[in-house]
Image (cartoon, rainbow, N blue to C red; front, top):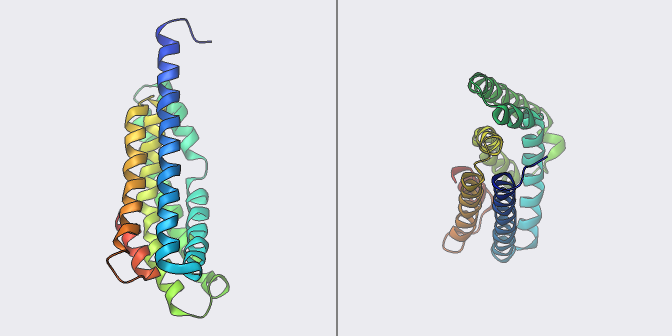
Length: 185
């Protein structure tokens, strides 16, 4: 139970930061989707959605619930959180490589015979590596209750995605190019 005063203030401040981050990333994600629909068309947006689903499933599988463990460890404090974060990151990187291997084996079943979606997937798949690092960092920030930095982290990530979509306004519309830009941001 939170005590009156500082505990409640911290609770409401953290909640406001999380809500602001969630609303901002949803709004920026909406703008990104509008940009993609406008520039790539219905077929390109559909291919992007399908490939993103594969990547998000990979992110969920490679996170493996370890972020919750890190949040709890960081909230408890102590020196044990640093080795745990290091081990978590190593495990997530290993799981990313295993997931990439599964994608390589299942590619004929997952993708059509056209080259563009396959190239786009292989350009986007390396984004799982920085996502793993981001998952660890995000979990630590939430566990340490540094929501202002978590808010900044999520907004910068979403702005990078919006920038990648915006670059398609001046560059030729191409799904592989978009995936490369998203991986780089």
